[in-house]
Every structure is written in structure tokens, then in C-alpha cells.
Length: 275
Image 1: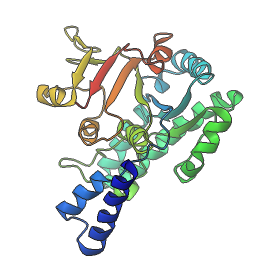
Image 2: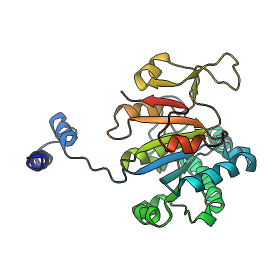
Image 3: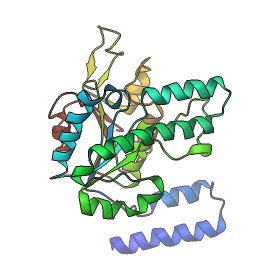
Image 4: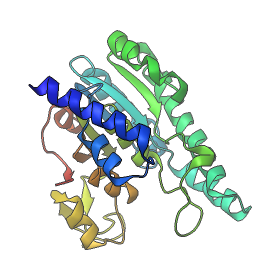
């Protein structure tokens, strides 16, 4: 019976695709009703922060590498990287030179790629490869062979990066890129490894009165309109429309064991949920 319903949905969608504009509301509803296949449902995506971890050097990065190497003995991981301070410096220079958003997006991609390469060399002894955007079709092989793969978190929009309402800074950066990988592949979880215990009411590095928010919904968080967020704001809109990854967790990678506990499904930081 379920198969008949699914087949009927696909047939209706095929008919609409032949007859209607791709922006037609009925066609879009039909595509939403079509079966949705989770490609990597047993894989967890983790993002190693650029400014929060990679920029701190060996003291912060090497313990995280050791913990990730231990985690992949029992879990399959996709490990994304952020850009960090070098990306911000490059954005500053490019913006002062009058470069458009698409150019800044390419610059940011290069820096996130550098961090991916460095992390890849550190995890090479554990057999973990770095995967470029063009090699994502081979993810299944990499995961089968090594249990993990590293990728640069910046989405490969390049010149096709959506233009922001204000300014020229690319709105979809490494937080969004890692999340889109998790959502597109139907992964189990999305975990952001930062240098803070989670989401705060303000920046805890500059505001001693900032308090931790252990759990919150996307709508509640948007409603708070906080001046500072530990993740990119466009990520919240992506979560609103997600089919698979309906929650994310932000954890402190400077605290040993936190990553392992989060991958095991424990609530150890801040949970942001879509519903």
C-alpha cells in the first residue's frame, strides 16, 4: 500500500513537471510529498571551528584530533572546517578593494580549505582523507574505508553566492555549509565544535553577565534577536525548512570528552531545534 502511494505521488509529480512552471505552488507541494531518501543516516557531521579552535594552534587542535580519532573507531563522521581569523582578514581586504560577494565567497572557501588540509595532515595517520567538493560522489567509499572524511565547510557557491541584503560579506559561510551537507545527505546529527559551552545571551568573551541557553527552538531564538550568535544567522532559516536534521548541538571542544559524549547522543552543550 505504501509503495502504491509513493508511486502515485511520483507519477503526479512527473505529470506536473511536464505541464507547469517550476515555481508553480501545486508542483512544489507535490515535490514535497514525494518520497525522500536519507543517503547517510548513520553518519554524524561535526564542524571544527576556525576561529574558535584552528586559530588557537596545537594546544587546542591536537586534543580535538586525538578525540576525533578515537570517536571514528565506533562512529562514522564527516568533519567540516571553518575559516577563522584568516578568512575575516581576507574579507576585510577584499571588501576594501570593492570586490563583490561572489569573490569574497571564493576567498573564504580558500581559507576553509587550508584548515581542512591542515586537519587532514594531522589525521592522515588514522587514514582520514580530505575530500574536495568535486569528490563528494566518493564519500561512501571514504567512509567505508576509514570511517571519516574531512571537507572544507564553505559551501561551493563561489560566484553564485546569494547577495546579502546589506554589505558584501557572504551570508552562507562554513556553519551553513556544514549544515547543508548534513541535511542533504540525511545525516544523523550536526554538531558544532566551538570554544564555548554553547549559545549564550551575549558574547561570554566580552560580557561577564552572559548566561548559557541549554536548549531553544529556532523561532524562539529568532524572536530574541540576540546581538551575538555562536552560529551564523542564515543557518536558522535553513533549519526551518529542513526535512532531516531538525536540531543541532553546539559544544565546547576545549573540554576533553565533550565531543565524544555529543556524538553518542548526550546533551552536553546547547540544543537548537527546528520545532
